[in-house]
Image (cartoon, rainbow, N blue to C red; front, side, top):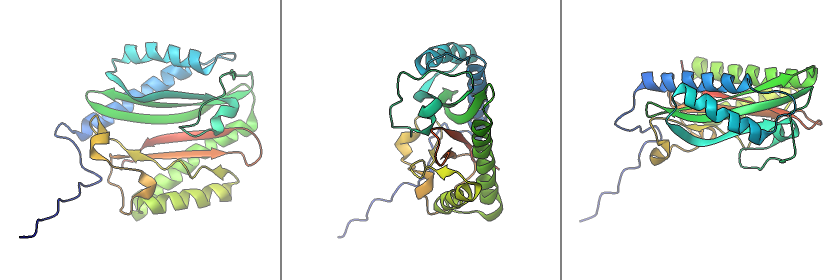
Length: 225
C-alpha cells in the first residue's frame, strides 16, 4: 500500500499559545523599547554602548528575552544588511543618522520593530529616514487594498524606491513572527511568499540607501489591518 505523504505545514502555522491580542501587546511594548533607546542616543555614543544602554530599557519594560540580537547601526553602518558586521570604530556624529532594530518577547509573543533617526542637521539623512517610513506605508497600503502576495509586495517596494530616487536593498525580505519561537513554524521570508500574507503574522522590512552617499535607512513593523 502506498504511503500517504506527510502534509507540509502552512507557512502561517502558529503555536497553541498564539493570541492576536498578545501579538499587538508585544508590538506596542517593543516600540516603547525602541523609543526608550532613542532617548539615550547622543553624539559620541558607539553601537556597543547603545546596546548596553538598551538592556536597562528592556528590563524596565519587563521583557522576557530577545528573540534576535539588538541591532543598532550608526552612520555608514546603516547601509549594511542584518548579517553584515558593523565597522566597530563608528560613533554617532553631531549631524548623523542611526537605526534601531529590535526583536523582543513579551508574554510569549514576538515583537519586531525598526526605525531610523537623525541627530543635528542632516537634511539628506532626514529625507532618507522619512522615505523609508513613506515606502513602508505605501507597501502596507497596497497589501491592505489589493491583497498582494509577499513576492508582489517586494517587487512593488523595489519599483517605488527607485522611483523615489533611493537604492532598495533586495536582500531584506521580511519574515514571520508569532508566539515564541516562530522558527518552529518555518514561515520563511515574506518576499518569497506566493500568497497574500495574513494580518498580524508577518514583518514588512524596508531598507533603502542613498544612491551614492554612505548612509541608508531602515523601517519595519507588523503588517496589520
